[in-house]
Image (cartoon, rainbow, N blue to C red):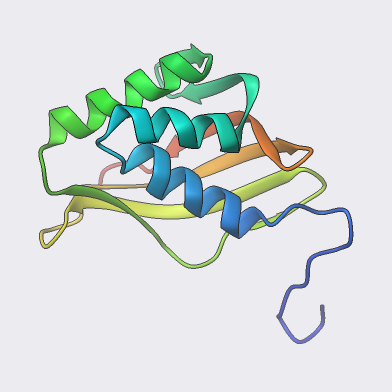
Length: 132
């Protein structure tokens, strides 16, 4: 829209709601049962996640990656959205940063999702290069 605002087209999913829910309910969720329930709601039956160094297939494998990240980085580690997600024609993007809840940012990036019938079918995790 010319004034800089965006509006959902009738057949477009709510990219912001979906990608924020993925960040909060999957990648910030420490309870594996709750994380698995969120994956069932947010992702298709056989999703694929593309990380810089790996391709992860299936909800259970995505849940395991999220759980391992949270375990590895510690109890206060959080992913935080930066602004609203945008998208069109089945692709949505959400920028984020991550680090200890009250500490410095240690990681930034974007999630890029292909959305089919309101659910994530493929997710690309794009990490920004480290700053010096």
